[in-house]
Length: 520
Length: 98
Image 1 (cartoon, rainbow over the protein chains, first blue to last red):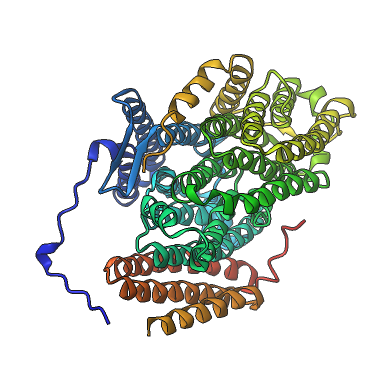
Image 2 (cartoon, rainbow over the protein chains, first blue to last red; image 1 turned 180 degrees about the vertical axis):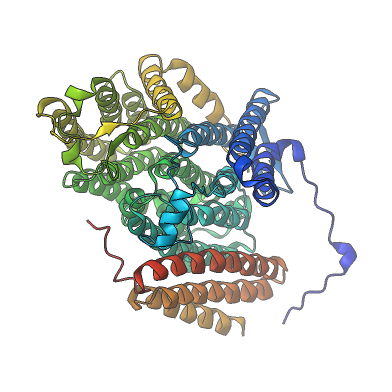
């Protein structure tokens, strides 16, 4: 029996490259400042201070990411190899930061003093205390540090070069999101139910992720992705320990990005959560999750790709079809977009499966394009309101195009981008991903992708027809205009159009980011 | 010898997984998740012994800290839904479906 002896002096001081980790550290630092503001600042000033801290933190982190990107060719490891700072990671982190800023416009929105979040989360829905807290005009400003912690986790997740860092990042990103899901101002029972479902399923899936990590640690003797890759090429890829570990790890990863058959949480959570937060989850969390999937499968399991490819083929096909087919029967706008997001997860997986440079760069481009369109679409949903809050049911959107042509037209444009109509970013993204998959020899996947795009186009167009060609309801929803939401919609629409009409610069950026693949 | 611990950890993990799927009380479901995390800890420590490295034992500490954070968030969420519904059964939470 081997015994481990280690004297205290044997443990070397870790060397941390603070400059390379700065974007993550700035966001997490801003979150800590936010907690202090919550504790020390008077109640009346908290909202302004929190928004200021969040925006400054996100902008500073984005600026630093750009600086890292245009400095010397980024291809380094930091923090003793635990975090990778390379082209694809910086691209993903920059995308997450911009999308988080856009979502922040929705989160910080206050039409007539109403925040989209509950006045006091501890009050029971429908109770006198809740009414009192609403009348008193309380606001739950803790949401800002929580969002920043979640964004910090999202930044580490795709950068993590070992599975332990990745697990911690997964939890740092998920735990605040579980809480935030339950904090909607209206329809609070739905919101709380979404939080419980997301939490229980999320915790379940992270247990799978962790057990997979344990098995891979048993196989390779290390949780570092590069060590696992080296162990696979040395020992061959048929060990049961390895295959079981990869399977369990994939369950955890695919759950986070909502790929079928682990997609069940997505519609419930997207529908129940406050829409501003749904925008954050549908864009940033998806980008981070796909970034993590890319890193694990491109770095750690690259040498095993002939073993995981059949499984990922099945998952991608199932995801595309389930997302597109089930979305047809939906009657709630947010739920429909949730299924659409599942289908888009499938399209992204076709890019992942290609495991070549084109696959990586097209997936990166798709992530950015899809993220902007999604935030824009959810921003439109927050504007269309009934007396009791947002008009969720699709029948309430009938004839919106005749009363509010601009809002309905923008929403129609986003839907066409989701469907992948030319001159929108959706078309360019899908074209790039399918081209990469075809070059990688995945022709059947491309066929399924095109077929499910066609199925999906049906329900997108159905909403457009409903908005423009049916009679407006007498008591139809009104459009609540707020400058911040309008800004988010405008940015989303502008980027969707630009990436569709002149995709060259963005595609080139994604290609140069993917040029050296991930650092090991 | 360490193989026995791995078998035990797999059994505990399975019990936890089945518990999550069949139990109705949110608290019990959550306890089953914790059982799964602890099974993972056992696996990490056994593998650390097997490889003669300390990594696995250190990872177990990380897992404990994360599990503690998860308890805080989880119980808060379950408490909120219990206060508004007077029930913590996961079957009663059925407003969102299809």
